[in-house]
Length: 52
Image (tube, rainbow, N blue to C red; front, top):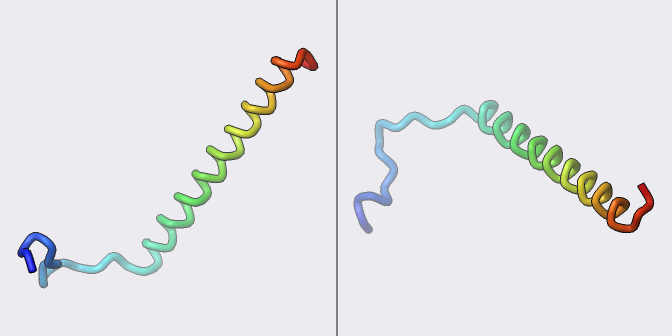
């Protein structure tokens, strides 16, 4: 196996709590971006149809 694929022995692991926090914040950020995207698309749709 190539040397660059190996994990160094002296590397400290990321604490589980911090990893969970990073994942949770990433998911929340994705929800916010997805929610904003649907709202913008809905507003554009009403403008195109002339309902606004």
